[in-house]
Length: 468
Ligand code: C2O
Ligand code: CU
Ligand code: CU
Image 1 (cartoon, rainbow, N blue to C red):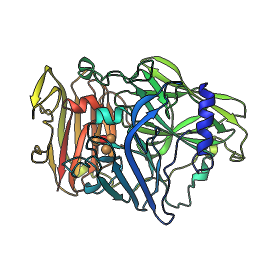
Image 2: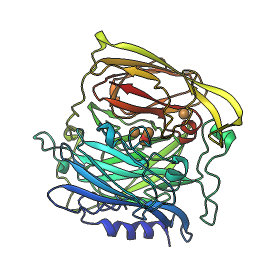
Image 3: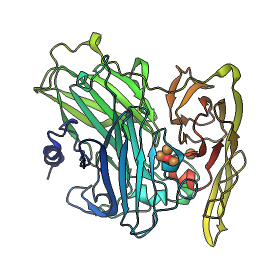
Image 4: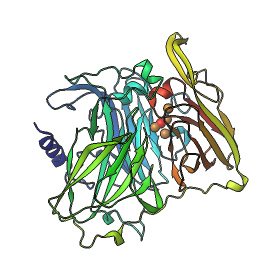
């Protein structure tokens, strides 16, 4: 079956569900109309990733792509998680400014959900935007084999913006899989790669499809929500010959839309693009790059549609309302330094009877791992309500997407490039880059702070901060 045919079939399954009918993404079933209630079951599953083969993965509700959880800004969401895996898990809601009890980190915020157990997550997202969810246990394998999905929080009612300002809304999840030709998994992690950029997957997919083509309305503004759910890779996106603007980063709208150019998206990061489509019957090529080389990644085909806008132009670019993130008080901020280094211990170490590798450190500490009765000291203690500047220094020749749970921080400075300050939950530090981020420590709890390259996190680049 050709890729086009497959995407067409998957497309028709989601037609009429509110989001773009053409993105191949299943939407989670809403269980009640007066509130946002969902059930997610983690289970063994089989996916057709390479056409004609089956991959023995793990899926939310047995699916890849996982069902999209849709919520609304300021409205409670309840998600019942059932663990049908043979091992413990927890679910983390990446990017949501959430109560610590719902953050989904084993031992630090909750007991692991054991096989056969159920846990109910309940939270009210203060921000609208593109977020995602994933386990925070055995992440290399649980995420690597397919457990990751999108969480889309719609904007609260707003006179300046309605979702209809976009003629289509396309969620696009990016992941490279570690696959053999017959669809079986190859090695998810190879130590010598873990000590460098991480082990890259070899089979590239967008919404589970290789080099897909999606239909989009012609002559309209459409919203592309790119989410990098990969364990390792940086995707560098560009769109040829068509007006395209970055409108939101990690779920946070930016005040002035910025033309899209080679936007690097590290593991865990999201970017929303507003794209002005041409006349019907044309193709827009979205490219992904490596160094200076770019290659065709996916294509959008414009079609006549009843969603089509009548006067879309550069003057009518949709304006997303800003999220209510507290403004850091830089005058009175305290600066904390974090140095990210390579430790160079290539021989495995033994801990709690298990051997593992330790390659990386934050402030000279590698994460010792954690268990019910052994929670290590935080990397820093922060005072509730105060503004902090984190001065991050990457002393390694590799990129690190550094993620902080529980907050949106403002990226304010880099020693390598000019920064127009923006809010994010994950910042990609390039090799030897020094970056400053700032945020108000307004959310009490013990918050994970780690590199989102899962192999880096598992081999030392992880810790937490404590706000009280
Ligand atoms: Cu998406 Cu602790 O991470
Ligand atoms: Cu997170
Ligand atoms: Cu890293």
